[in-house]
Length: 105
Image (cartoon, one colour):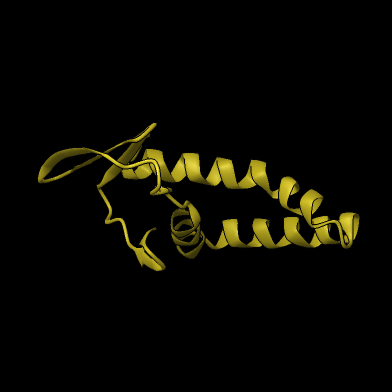
């Protein structure tokens, strides 16, 4: 997902976004487009949609993620930073698998 102002922009399957400093490059089935973005504009690609789609497609991943979240909640209680850090390895692994399957990034 991406945003214009406060509006999210869905990045279609098969489209690759590359950020290199102020330069953004978008590659897809129709070709490639590169532009420089002024420093006052923040450009960010959010992985939440890829994670959500991967979880929707694989019930085993859902079960694994839920078990991880329960374990982390028990271990870390109110320490949100530790809870979030504990999920990073799982999220990175799922995103790596998803991108290989989709041929992205």
